[in-house]
Amino acid sequence: MSLQITSMADIFTIILVFLLKSFSTSLTSISQSGNMTLPVAQTDAKIKETLKLEISADAITVDDKPVVKLKNFEMGNGNDPEAQRAAADKLLKILSDQRKLTPDPNRDSNLIVMADERMPYSTLQSVLTSAASAGFVDLQLVVVTPN
Amino acid sequence: MSHTSPEGSSEGSEEFDLNIAPVIDCLTVLIAYLLVSVSFLSLAVLDVGVAVSGEAPTPDEALPKEPPLSLVIQLAQPHQVVLKLTGGAKNLHLTVPLPSNGATRAFDFDKLKLQLDQIKQKYPSLSDVSVAAEGTVVYKDMVKAIETIKPDFPKVFISGENVSL
Image 1 (cartoon, rainbow over the protein chains, first blue to last red):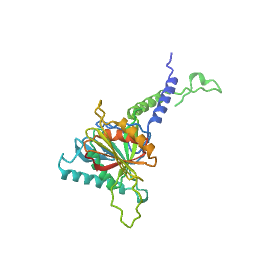
Image 2 (tube, chains in turn cyan, green):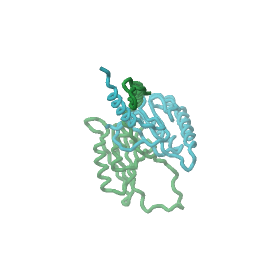
Image 3 (cartoon, rainbow over the protein chains, first blue to last red):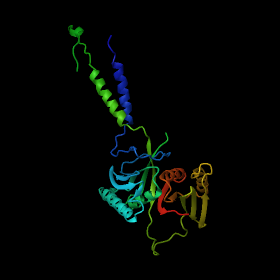
Image 4 (cartoon, rainbow over the protein chains, first blue to last red):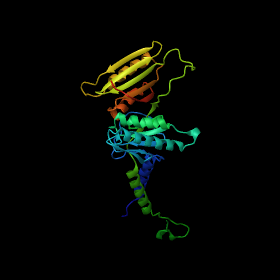
């Protein structure tokens, strides 16, 4: 008696097609990293490909490159305003450089923001100021949908 | 890869038996790779704008006869939501404070939703809403507020100003 593997091949093919369909092939990798908890919200808007900015408890990353170190979501070393200003300036410079990469008529004002749900508004405010100064005034706040 | 079966050697008829074991191997590897790399989390976005402050218009510019109607929603500690409706034909200066939910000691977004529904019915031309917050308000609550506002007012702006009540 020989093993009938034709039906097994059929099943595998169906599983493969299903997985390939659900596997999104995007230029920007949008996935929740281990040390970040995204907020949950009900929305239907899909993510549009553009520059990605991530804010976790220990760093701000632009396009998956860490640019500013954070200490428990705070820029600089806690209450040092000079260090906070230097960090905000560094972020502004990097965002401005990224925006200049696209030619002027098509210059994108969209920015994908992935931030931890525990982040205080003061940190978001500093990031928003730098982003708006660099020309990124349309934000896409990434959330996890309940369903 | 194919080969002629021993029974198929009679003249004019050839039977091919496809060896699908390597195909199965490839499919198993592909499925394992896809299962590891695929994310089953469903991600979406909330589109918001940044409220950019600029210079005041020069006197030469034509000024509107009435100040534009604007709604600002402020989140402050301890878990208080304040709605500020200003401008319009009657030059409104309305402030509606919504205290925290007594049971959960959190922002009362259900009351905010009811207030927003009423404002939308009363002022259908109002489309933009600005959201501001105190420095210690967490991002989760900001997102929850934006989620509550969006169905009534699709254009939401995050204000860069710090709120202190």
